[in-house]
Length: 366
Image 1 (tube, rainbow, N blue to C red):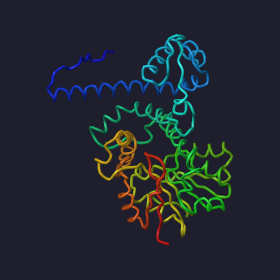
Image 2: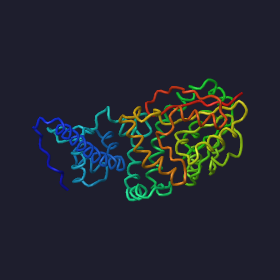
Image 3: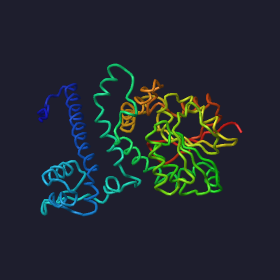
Image 4: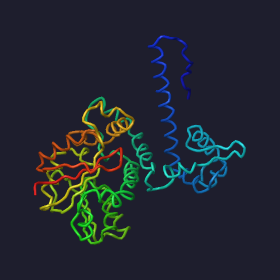
C-alpha cells in the first residue's frame, strides 16, 4: 500500500492554500481511521488491558502476556506510540499505557471506557457492501445483518451509562422517582436491548418489578440469560414485542434509552407508551442531544452522530419501511411535537451532565 506523496505548497494563491489545508485534513482523517482500526484490534485482543496490567513492556513481553505474535506486537505498539495511544521509552525499548489513558482503553464498564464504540465500528466496517447498495437504491440495512460485534459493542457502550450514572445520578434527576422505586413499583424499559438498565435497577431497588420490551429477538434472549446470571430473574422479565403495536400492560414508570429516533414509527411508539402509562405514571426518555437545525450540529460530536445514524440508526429504521429520523432527528422541539401528538402534556429536559445525550421527563395530563 502506498500513500500519495504530498509536498508543501509554496504558492501564495489563497484558493490553493485552502485546498492544501483541506488535503492535510483528509490525510489526517485517513491516518486516524487506520489508527482506529488498530485500536479496534487492541480492544478485541485485550492488548490495552494487558499493558495496563503489566506496566511497561517490550513487544516480546506483550506478545507473551497477550498470546499474540511478537512481530505483530511490535508493529501495533509502534503505531499506537506514533498515534499517542501509548508511550515509548527508547532507552529500554518498552511501551506503556499512560495512567490517564487506562480508564478510556482498559477499564471495562468504567465511566470513560470506549471499547464499546470500537467494537461497533468492527460491525459497521463489515457492512460496507450493504451500505453501498442502499446508497444507490434506497431502503435500509436491517438489524439482522449486523454481526455480534454490534450488539456486544452497544452493550459495552451502554454500560458506561447504566453501570455508572443511571442509578447514581439520572434517576435522582426526576423528583420522586427514587422514592417510588424504593417503595416498589412497576417499571418498563421499551427498546431494552440486552436488558442492562433494568438489571442494574433491579439490583438497586429490590422492591420493584421490571419488564423489558424489544423487537429484536436475539437481544431479548440474551437479556433473559443476563438476568438469570445476575440473580434478578425473579423480578425482571423480558418480552419480544413491537412496541409501536402496543404494550400488554400498564406501568408506573416507563423508560426508553436512545431508541425513539430508531423506531420505524416514532409516533406510534410514543402512543403505545402513553397508553401503557398508569395513572400518574412517569416516563423518562433518553435521546441524542441535537440541535433543531443543521448549523447547530456542525461539530465533531454532530459528525459522529450523523455518521452513526447513516450506518445504524437511520438505516435500520428505513429497513423496516420506517421514518428514518436518524440519530440527530429528535431534537427537543421534535420530541415535544411527537409527545403532544401522542397525548402527553409536558416534556422537561432534566439537564444531565453529558454532552452527547439529553434525558427528558415526559408527563401526561394528571
